[in-house]
Every structure is written in C-alpha cells, then in structure tokens.
Amino acid sequence: MQEPKFSIGIEEEYLLVDKQTRDLVPEPPAALLTKAEGAIKGQVSPEFLRSQIEVGTRVCRSVQEARDQLIELRATIGRIAGEFGLAPIAASTHPFAHWESQHHTNKERYNVLAKDFQHVIRRMLICGMHVHIGIEDDDLRIDLLGQAPYFLPHLLALSTSSPFWQGEPTGLKSYRLSVFDELPRTGIPHSFSSYSEYERTIELMVSAGLIEDATKIWWDLRPSARFPTLEMRITDVCPLIEDAIAIAALYQCIIRLLYRLRRQNQRWRHYPPFLIRENRWRAQRYGIEEGMVDFGRGAMVPFSHLLEELFELVAEDAAYFGCAPEVAHARTILQRGTSADRQLKRYAKVKAEGGSEHDALIAVVDELVVETAAVPGANTAAVLEGESA
Image (tube, rainbow, N blue to C red; front, side):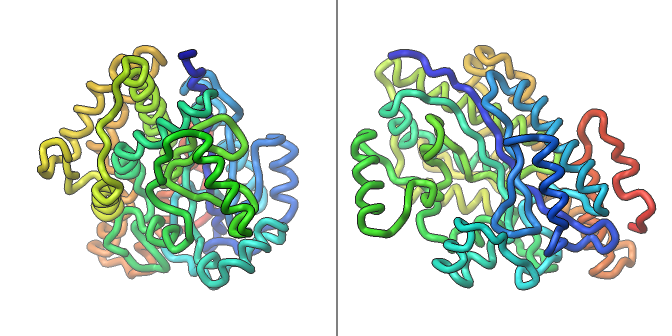
C-alpha cells in the first residue's frame, strides 16, 4: 500500500464582536469581508450567520507550516476587523449573544439551509475547527473513517470552548454540540465496508432528493466532499492558537497510527457507536475533568491517564512528522485548563469580587478577544485599547 501524504489543513470559524459593546455584530460592514478577501485570497469566506467569518489554511506539508499560516490568517482578520471597530473571537459560542438577533448570509447555499431547517438552523450561532488529513486512497480513507471515531471524544475534550449560551452557564464544556446535534446527519459517523458502499449510500440520498451532495453530511468525522482528505469536525475552536495546533497534530498522528496498524494487517478494536457516544457526551459535559470510559478495561479512567496512553501510542508518528513538541502541548492544556475552564474561572472570579452578571460576561469576552489575538507579532495590549473592561 502506498503511504498517504498525510498533508494537513485547518479551518477555523470566528465570531465578530463589537469592541464597544462586546456583543456580536449582526450586520458587519460588507467592506470587511471584501478587504479580507483581498488580503488573503481564497482563504477566507462568509459563514451561515453574518456575525461569523471562516478562514482556512492551504494544503500544508507539516503542522508547523499549518501553524504559520494560521498565525497569518488570525493576525490578518484581527487587523482588518479592528479597522471597523470589531474583533474576532475563536470560541465556539459567544458568552451572552442571542441567536434571535442574528441574520443569515444572503447566499444560495445558506438560503436553502434556512428554508430546509427553519428554526433549527437559525440557532446555529456556533463555531468549530475542522482539520483535514490527506488520504489519497479512497478505500483507505473509508477504512480509517470506521476506526478513528474512538479517539474523537479525546480531541473534543481538549478543545472545549463553549460553556455559555445566551448569557447563562450551561453546565456543559461544549454546548456547541448540543446545538449542532439538532441538525440531521451529525454525530458519530456510520462505518462502511468500502468506498463503493459509501458512494452508493450518498448516491441514494442524492437521487431521493434528501441532499444535493456529500457536503450536507455533517458527521464528527467525514470524507471531505471536495478534497481527498479525512475531515475531523468534532472539535470546538480554540482561542489559543497553540492549543489548536496541538489538537491538529494529535489528530494527524492518530490517523497515521491507524494506517500503520493496517499496514501490519491489524486494526483498532471496533467498539459500538453506542459506547463511543457515551465518551462523546462525557467530553461534551465535563471536558478534561471527569475522565472517560476505557472500554478495554471496562472502567472509568482519568483523562490524564488516557492522554498519556495516547502519547505512547502515537510517539512513533509524532517523531515521523517532527511534531512531538506540538503533541506534548496537550499536557499544557491539561495543566492550564481548556478555554471553557478558563472562561468559567474568569466568570466566577468577577462575580466573587462583587461584579454583576453582565460585568462577568463582559470580562469573559475580553479574555477571549485577547487570547484570540495572542499570535506572534500581534499587539494584544492594544486589541481592546480605549475600551473599558
């Protein structure tokens, strides 16, 4: 079997906040997107809601190359948004914005979605991070699609950044998934015996008029409809860029681990989606705090133990890609907490010091703005300059 290229690409969705109010801007100036498109051609696009914007790296040969591109993309969007009195936040929900106040982008694809899904799609005030890994062989891509879901809850837990919804703590570290799961064709992917079976399934859905094409499949992991990649979609978007890169690197290593097993006529043990969904829920609810089920042991295990075991499994792959430091950064996420942990801590601190509910939520937004802007060369001290926290 010819070894895949394992190229990598990262897509991130951001929310645009008004620097004065810290609320989302329902109608950002059209000139903002036009200027961004001129500065980073082909790497920026509108999202379903006008208060969102999406960026994507080009096809990268390494995690380090993807990091450099993502730094440039974040810095460019931050600079241009700042010219209009706005700032991007790389968080999967806004702490207090209301979805009823948002408007969807007037674009054919989005107009169709709005018509088809009605109230459900209007609530999609959420952002995510998607990571593509290049797997040129169709059948290999489908084979790995059936094995990789075991690890998806681990990646979600490290990424959580959506603990608030419409001004309230939800009790979940990734409330984004609760919103997203209202759409059809989401969640843990179905497994297929071959690429031809996958193709027949998609063709049946298209011919029945259920979908126009495979881009309307929104599983946590899917074969990309546009590229020969396996696209990981389960994760929240991370305010701190090094956290995002650590998760992307870990996913790339997991995919190569599973390829190595196949090359040796082995494969990761199959577990029913029913069980994987339990760990997915635990990641969504608790993030990195309460542990997950080790199905081999049949016992609950602290997340830190599971992560160390995963490091051992992918050590060869991290060395192969030269990304061991990026993978090891996941330990820093454990020590410092995910974005969801930091948001909740900041919120509780302001309230404990006598601040109002509104003060606490504004402080969370400020922290997200600063963390999102914290890329090399960016002036984070001035990102909210002249504004009261």
